[in-house]
Every structure is written in C-alpha cells, then in structure tokens.
Image (cartoon, rainbow, N blue to C red; front, side):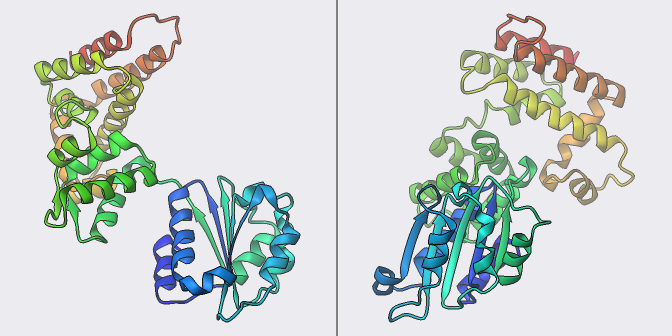
Amino acid sequence: MTFEQILQDLKQKKYSPIYFLMGDEGYFIDEITNYIANNVLSEEEKGFNQTILYGKDIDTTEVIHASRRFPMMSQYQVIIVKEAQNIPKIEDLEIYANNPLNSTILVINYRYKTLDKRKKFYKSVAKAGVLFEAKKLYDNQIPQWVNSYLSAKGKSIDPKASALLAEFLGSDLSKIAHELDKLELALGSSVKQYTATHIEKNIGVSKDYNNFELQKAVLSKDVAKANKIILAFGKNPKAYPIQMTTVTLFGYFQKLLAYYYLPDKSKNSVASALKINPFFVADYTTGARNYNARKVVQVISLIREYDMKSKGFGSSTTESGELLKELVFKIMH
C-alpha cells in the first residue's frame, strides 16, 4: 500500500491489527504513526488503551504481552513501538503476527532499516496487516510532493518557488513540511498561491542569488548575471557550498545530454522523459541552442573535475569561490 492509501483507509476507520512501518523516510512513518495516535481513540480511551514503547528499553516478549491484552471500555487498544530497529531479534514477533488480536492496533516504527523479504517474518507481517516501506524521494520528486502537500491544504505554489524550496531545504520532507506550515501561518488563509517572493521573504532563500538562477545564467550564457551570482556565493560559502552548485549543474547538463536524443521534443514529452515540470522545458531548449552535444559531454567532465577539487582531491588549495569562477568560465567559453 502507498502512504496515501494507508492514510485514506485510516480516515475511513479501516484499521489493520499491525502497521509495520520501515525505511529511510521518517516523515511518512511519523505521519502514519501520529494519525493513529491522535485519531483512533478518544482522549478518555487513551488513558487505559494507548501505550508507547521504545525499542531500546524492551524486547519482543514485552511487545507480544502488551499486544495480547484486551482493551478496557474501548473497541481498540493502540500499541506504538518507536525505535523498533533497536529491538534484538525482532523477527521473534512472528509468533504474534501469525495470530494477532483484532482489538489491538500494533504500530511498529522500524526506521532506517527494512526487513528481509525472503524471511517468514516479512511474509507473516504482510499477511496480517500493513507492511509499508518509507522510501526517500529523489530530488526531482520533491517539487511534485510539495505541490501535493499544498494541494491537500487548498494551496498551490508556482514552479520556480517550488524549485527554490527544494534546493534550499533539500529532500528532508519533515523540514519542508514544517517550513510550509510556517509559511501558511505567516501569510494567512487568504493567500492561495505561494511565489518565489514569498519563499524569499519568509524562508530566507534569495530568489535572485541561488543555484537555480546560476543554472539559468549559465545555460543562456549570461556572463554578467553568472558573475554576480558567483560573487555572492563566494562571499557566503557556508550558505552556498560549491558542492551543492556542482550537483545542480551536473543534474542539468546530464538531462540536457539526454534531451538531445529524445525523438519527441514536444513540451509534455520532454517533461515526462526527463521527469521535470513542463514549466522548465524551455530551459533545455535554450541550453541545446547554446551548447552542442560535444560541449555538454565536456561540461559534464569539467563539473566532475571541479567537484573533486572542491573536496580536496588533487591537492587543490584554491578557495571554493575561485574554483566556481574557473568552472563557470570554462563551461561558458
């Protein structure tokens, strides 16, 4: 089941006896867990029927004993096991998974690890309840996730603002959700669409000096604009680490190389093939006009070289600002 399907079932009060939530993306695990913790039982029922356990303090026997209790004056009891990755021999829970109580909702948070699909325990949990792997999203999936998150709140965000947010906050969904919630409080319910200006004023990322704008300057060969941005980056290397810039540029030129070989270069086809928002297809049209395929291959090689230099390989002692200046000059000339 997907994250959305699990939440939909929970909202319809379709409960499973076991929710085994594993994987690297803590946001999805926390959202499912918190929904169950906050909504299955009433406040009066929680006192006797909701228990939170921590993996470092318990073993599987304690989890089984707690799960086999019957609820008091309630249809369900909820057992939430946090940090379950610290429980020794967690596969011993197979005994309970083979015969769970329908009056118990057992929620297991198994962060940063996954079960072996070949083992009996995996199959037992999958048969008895919900087995969900919370996977980290790829960078190119973040803007779409932001759109979905805001859409559920009756809000929207323009593509540039979404790209800025993803660049500034990375792929930490909990952090992004927190900042979007703060933005909603700051702007109020009357603002329905967030723009790059909103992101700049309320979250702190500059809409004029960022990797997204540097990329646009490079692909359009706007030397003056690129130099202004590089100068700003050089003055604040902690906020604008060169490694983030090389990742951004590498990703763009890698996709630009793929763009050359697409049989269909219509906007929707390109967006689908490159997994980008259709809004940004024009950037690849511009890039292809200014950089031929041979040059793009050279640029990708240059970016790799300077990324290594920025990490100290080759005994480079040049400051990151100067390295970036050299790299962009070589790309654009």
